Length: 404
Image (spheres, helix red, strand yellow):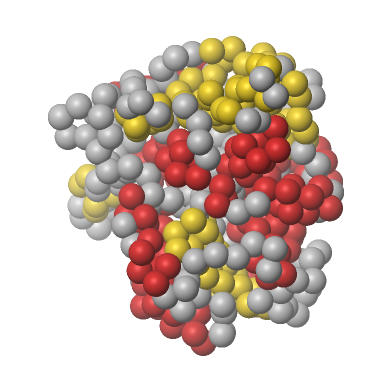
């Protein structure tokens, strides 16, 4: 397997550090718009399988040419969701398997944004699914931790733990703190704003997909391994759009443990229009310039990849499932907890980016050895769960199951 990794930020760099310990691939080209980031990720490894390149992730032709030049048969997208579609199409143009950790962006319904879906997450990719399938090509979408591992958990629950599933609810919480910062998101603020301020999507078998108000339906969820109770709220996320395509459940939801202070900050950004991506004109020393307010917010905050030494605590990603097994009610929480102290000591990557990065590497290894295979635009639920969970444990990162 020869891999083109596009994006050498926190998650991309963590991908390289995890993959460097595994023998399943022949080469990994690490490409970024900023060549210094790509070179730093490669230099850290001292592994001849890795090399750095510069590429604009928005330039479909340039990405396809880079895939061909290095004879890469897989493109792994570690950029933010703005670049999903050009990278997705570049992979198909070059005849490469495509893997990402998010999906194409949504657009709210023009008249009823908090009741009806407009363009849903992944709609643009699934619109091309038939063409991918006809060509025998694979796009594995949503293969991070959430979405990704959470979807694998859903498939595992359906296959091995339940006869009927009433509800699948992805629940994400943490007790992470960052020394010296009052507000320092542990993941890309660009993506965080996109997820948290868009209308959340919920799935119900009788209604299909529908939307609600941001931060709706608060609930307190007790997270394992010392994290404890955290208030969680509805947030737009890919699992709700993926799980119902392959797993039979009457309801699917996603809730984040954000905290009141974090929610208040996001509401203020929205109130001031600082969540917008459309450029605005501002004065500059050489005349007016056009900038995206959201990009300005991101530039004013610390890079999440640099926060590891200041972070304390654990992060938990998991899937809560309620249903029936052997005629009796059952309720479980399948989860994956990463302690920042461990991920920093073991890999030099902070917990949230490491937890995101390990899952696509596991998936690449399964694709390389043939344990996972397929054609079309497929989510993690389309593949058997047990090989993934066994290999994740082999990576030194075990998962857990708690009866509720």
